[in-house]
Length: 212
Image (cartoon, rainbow, N blue to C red; front, top):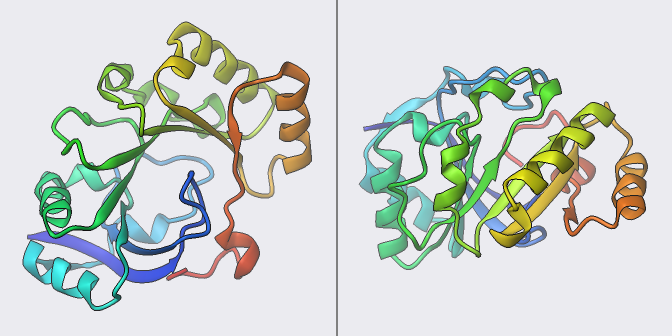
């Protein structure tokens, strides 16, 4: 059984899949407490569901793209099997993970969107850098940047771990903390090979609205 916070259909707001219809399966629990977290409601609330029940619910939305998110989905071990079975059912599966737990055993068909936590998150020490070796060219690494210290740290990490050789790199701002124009100007000044992304759903709906 897996504790599920919510399942809903919306527009994918982030990653290279931004703008596409997507079914989100939000799992309960998280092992981190990032300063800027926008899904604290997923820390504890939810209901127990079997994998077959979850898949049946996902099928009702008639949408091929599915994102497993949280919380931290990998905090519940059964999430690994859930993703495999969704792939077996023909879904295009994405995983949004904090990068603090191992991605080694995730089905190769799953597109992984993995965070590396910056200093302002106060969770930087939880980064599991061993995960980098398990990333595929189709995966993506995400940095959520809140200030110049985060930005400079991120540049060093990209260089130290040669991340541009691994997969696509995503930059986004801590919402309402760092202005998008500021981060974009830094990227352009340094000619970084990264993708800037907006959290599109926060501009379409109220930023605090759930289920979107």
